Length: 316
Image 1 (cartoon, rainbow, N blue to C red):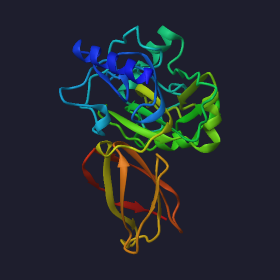
Image 2: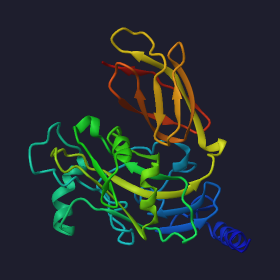
Image 3: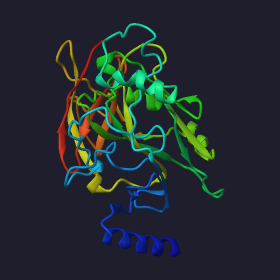
Image 4: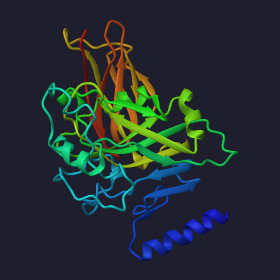
């Protein structure tokens, strides 16, 4: 009760002062926020301020609506108050070590400037957790506001580690993104059960790097949220995806295809290959598994309160 009363007082004071403070996210200007029993989760930990890489948000725009930001200019001046890694163009470590397989983006032009300034062009994200000892972790999700990942275009292959361990559940998501613009977008990723113990560490370290291809695929991340024991997603934060899973060679529907969202929820296509599924607003990474087809991942824009029509074409 004391925590609730304290947050209510702080919330009212911040609103009256014109600050952006919300029950789900706390003070958007803060570099680090830790809150108990939010509308989203038993415990929410956020690192990085919510400010669209220092560009700010257009009037009426919220990053949690699922909409992409308008395209923005680059490079931008880094706010030195930002936690290192956030709101900063990063360029994979293999860029410049060999010929770029599919060209490069404008962000990759910052490679040498980053190395001159910091001695490297790629930076880990360190998120202090320090969970109460009594916390029993039954589930968890990560929310990331990501910018300009374009693996399908530039033939990059990002490796992601969580506390030094390869995290294929995150790799699958970021390697499916095509954020030309550059534009920013929210993605939500469920943490698998065998990774939950990683969240008991005092600090969670996430690292995104392409160490092998030489691709010039720069990227940026505005903020990362860790949701411990997340609650059901509110209706206002959901959209719907519907469409048909199709055999691209024959044009026929694919029946019984397993459709998995990055938040861990699963659905199957019906007898006509159709599906309808609610999804959290943001960039949904959808993985399709069907007999006779290789697994394939797609990205779909999910807008809160709207229906997105999306067919999935599978190739043998």
